Image (cartoon, rainbow, N blue to C red; front, side, top):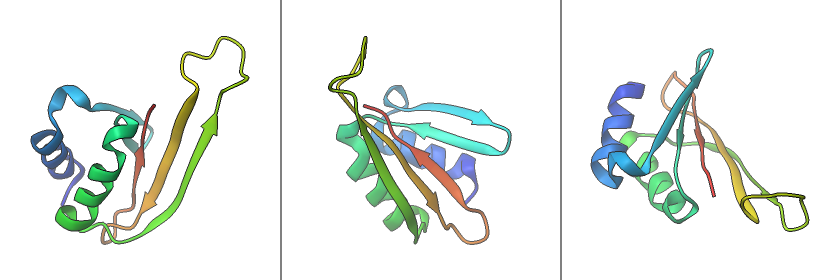
Length: 92
C-alpha cells in the first residue's frame, strides 16, 4: 500500500475530518486524537500490513506554563510496511 492508500483507508474508517496530515521532507504524518490511537494502530496492523511498532512515547504537560493540553501522546513511530517505513504521529 502506498501512503495515499493508507490515508484513504484511515479516512474511510475514521472520517476525513478527524485526521490531520502533514509532510516534512520525506516524512508523511497523520495526526489523530488520543481516543483514536488504538483503533488507528489496529487498523494499520490488521488492514494495511504494518507489522512493526518501534516506539511509542508521550509527554505530560501538567506543570508546563500556558499548556493548551495537559497530556499529549507524542509519537507512535516507525512502522515497517514492507520496504517503506512510515511514521504515525498522534495528538492529544
